[in-house]
Image (cartoon, rainbow, N blue to C red; front, top):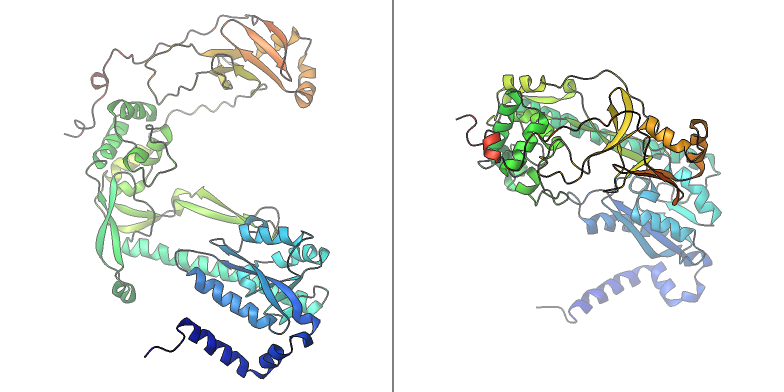
Length: 497
């Protein structure tokens, strides 16, 4: 039998329970007798760090319940600010809801008198609260903490000491969890060869590897995963290593892949690469694939790591930065056994890493970088050392990884000694150049026949550049549009057969 009133029955029961409380019942019957302190208007702030492993309603609910218990008999919450998916190490100005709360604190039309949080560790990290207290005090906004049982008094030595202790515990909780997770992942990769997350490398697919070793996770239906060769892209990876071992350069491999129409990673799997255009292969993509040790069949982890450091100084209120950096080879975590089918042998992979272009130890210095603009295409000229002299050039967007099927515009070259002679026509000497650059916007627009000097958008000189020596003869294209790609390169299908 359903209770009478439906949902209203639950509301009646809640009202009856609250009226059984003598204090609540008395306040309900005498609302005018409440103390002025009861009418404090509070802004509640909460934070949930992750969306994948936490329920937003539950996390925000228990924090709000802690705050309500703290301010019971003193005031009510009139507005809420809850951040979702942001780590505590980020400063308040870097969290959307916290930034809104700070803006509201500094607004004269704010709707609250104090700020309350459900737990110190949910809201603050390190000395963030100590750094933010001058802002709250300057605008007459109190901060209430459950750990203090009420408002913070920064002038009280006990409060100041406790806030520092809570800040240390907040940092320690993050660092301890980070260390435990990394240590566990390292052990799983070395001993079990586990796939610990992330997208599979180009050339592999993620397939099922059996039930989860944790019995509780297995009962929930979680499964292990491993890599398996992708029948579409795995031959491309093997072909790339074969050509590299045959002496091909990175640029030659990239050009050949684009000519043969091989799908690049973003074109093959656009759902995992929505930020990529999928237009074609690039040098960086080819280099990253040839440097990935997972193609040897071993699981490798920690090729990249995240450095956590202060943006300015320790416990800066702006928060801490997270910067991803490449780890050294001796810092990689490699599985003891081969755990998936290799696409290249370990000996061939190592041999491919030892193939490098001859490095030029000379250091070239350019004094006029960024001052040249290309008249035909509008690009900035790039520094280019030409015949033992500093110069600049524009290839109109062409790179060594793409075949130049047509060349309607020749490269534009500009030598720095010619540019200095051209500036002297406008009365600018090398000594005055630095002062003019600091005070004005100067650019030299270059064409094959005519240069013009603009200062703050006004044309000062327009003339032919002084010729001190002939322009270097440009190389003819290595390949032409008349030669089909199949006659110039070995196709992916034929390599290895």
